[in-house]
Length: 440
View (cartoon, rainbow, N blue to C red):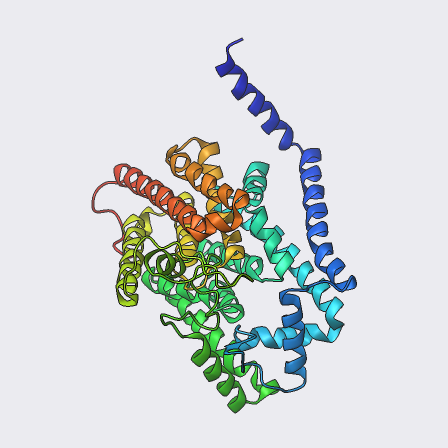
């Protein structure tokens, strides 16, 4: 039999099997088992007296909140805790459970966030929450499983942030702008970098969502802490956090001077500084031997100019690819939201490895594009991106020194941008000239 016929039949049979209810239950069981194992390992470290990574910091911060102590203070030239005050208040409540109880709560929340992120990514990618195609659930999670594990291992909230952002995107799709604004505000109150979404809301003229985000953020940063810290102290906490975190110099970014330009930071700022300036790219490691990977030795101001130019170029490409309001479809919105997440990952000054669990939505969109057969463009850009990410598994430090994760995200951004231009061209050909709404 012709091999070209065998392959589609085999895949079709497998696809049909996986879509059966028993197999879907098996996949759900596998997810529960994996999430349980990922959750159990931090607890195992706790009971065995092992290293707890950020879980210890979260517990100590919670205890400081309960004791009414200062949260943002310098120790060895940096803040230990560098997240906004609402995050510290949550940790204060969680620390009442004890250190083991706090770890259990956080890994449980992380598991729920993983499930929600997979579900919401599939909903956005397919445009229909009733569709249960297992490939759109399984493939994206498998492709970012290393980053998902890192959130459990280190105790980082990036999966929670992803679930909040995806929930906001679904809310925007269903015209529930108030909910969308609140969800983004909660994400920003946990970790500040989702605030980039405010620019998107304003450009897209989601006025209600933008107002909702602003009001919710004021409530979370000032009003909510007031009963626990007092209004003046809450304002002082905000000032201290801003003074410590909104810093950028040739030495470092915010409160991570030793990590800002090292291999661990996969943002545009991190990659451009270590490739274009002579900075120690291994400063965060235990070795005293400096590591240099720069291909040029430019001034700090010149590197900044290049980084700003690249960021502006990516932003202009994003805006140019956007469809006008009347042209938008579920497919184009899914690509647009995926591009927004990729922009945030690349442009945020500090973007460590575990941040890239956010690639779940771009990979879900790419998986849906491949399954639907609408475009092969994403394959040409996505496969090299996967190769770059795979290099990080084979050469964890060596590949990241040269920004493999950043450049993988960049390739996905370019491929999805081309796909969005394709959608724009198709919609323009389907509609008569002059019928489109001029609004963004």
